[in-house]
Picture 1 (cartoon, rainbow, N blue to C red):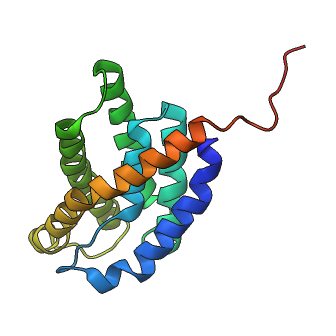
Picture 2: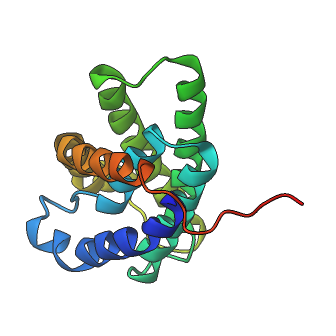
Amino acid sequence: MGGFISIPLLAIAAALQATFVPQIRFGGGGPDLVFLMVLSWAVNSPLDEGIIWALVGGIMQDLLSAAPLGTSAVGMVMIVFIISGLNRQVYRVGFLLLAAIVLLGSAFQQFVVIVILALTGFSIVLPFDLSYVVAPTIVYNFVLIWPVYFIMRRIQKRLSGVKPFFTPTNR
């Protein structure tokens, strides 16, 4: 069920990312709403559902940006795999672990995007981009993960009570 709900939710987040977020940027960085939603969903979902969210979110985000298609999805898929590994090792993701995942995941995601953009011919000035784009994005993501996580968790809990309309039977 979570895979189907990803399309409208991430489409709205990508549209907000392309239209509203540029209005509230600090420096060149702003909150990455799609990344925050994917991360929030992946923390409490199976690996396959998290990967669907990462792929759908990354592609939708790239469709509304100048980045090559799939640029954002690469880092998000890797982070979903890391989260899945952490979920197998830890009983549940708490406040401190979520904070660490957001900080390290945001830095990793931004680094992957910068590397892919550099490899595809975009002009990258690393010291400038790290201080002007990456640092503010990490701060925004760290602050906004809490409301986004709360909303996504509520949606997940609501969907867990919904029974599928059609269930295939084994014959």
